[in-house]
Length: 352
Ligand code: AMP
Ligand code: ZN
Image (cartoon, rainbow, N blue to C red; front, side, top):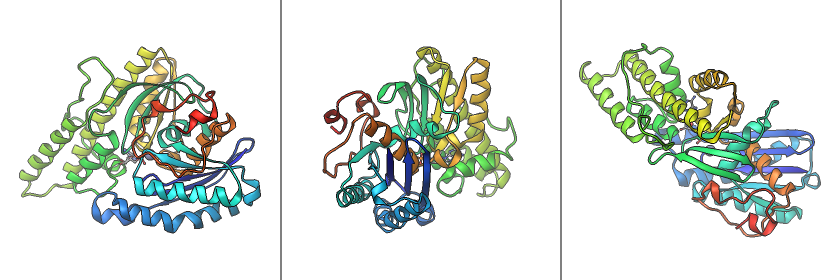
């Protein structure tokens, strides 16, 4: 089965063609980051308009790259949620219009299921069951995954997501949006031990996260450092704070991952979402998992953040199991991952 995948849930227009026999045939991504930088975050209305501009040219691009025409596409999949409603609507209506014009089935895909399954596109994919840590700009979730659609939520953030915390901390330090990669770069020059930031909610049992206290701690540290330096934050201070902040987030995620693996009785960990690109997080998880006789899997860097490949892949798995939705243009800005039906449930339940 050959699937065209469309991702437009936030500030990236992602297109891809995945073939169940041949793997990923083509993918293309346009990031709107430069457009949103002056506003310090994503402006939903601008995001929707830009998806309108980019969707069809990128569709043509991936079809040319995959050397395939409309007849050779078996189905179209799009991100149906969670995400920004206007942005989702653009992807959904384009997908349904193409499906109608080409006479093909169309399926809405859960964005976080896409992230969760993204490591399946790699040469050495993980095997079920595993524990997944989904760490993105909007989510921090620990999930026990027995198979596609068999998800048990073990813990999640009760306030800010890890990526959001990176973005807000970066803003406090005068670094541009999205802050994660900038903090990671500055942290490389940081002085170890200069600051010690709290590891929130690690001293009590449970698998939930909270990053809002860490945000306040970061703000107070930035303000104090500025005050000691005539209102300016020097690059060395920025690096020291970035390192302390990153260490705190990575340690917190590490502690909770170990706890989740133990609780679920698993030895395989999958990490996905934008924050899973963090080198320090990957390195520490690799050491921890190998110490436990287990293994950690993550997507290649370009598939950590939003992309069309993960949507084409996830959609393809569900379509092959017989899932499909009707001709409605239906999106869900909020959509719990645990609401998804398991793969072997009949078609009519798949798009509820
Ligand atoms: P997503 O929501 O999955 O598209 O991921 C975007 C989020 O990932 C943003 O909050 C980024 O700041 C964050 N991010 C991207 N790269 C890194 C990194 N190397 N370290 C930490 N956070 C990152
Ligand atoms: Zn995402």
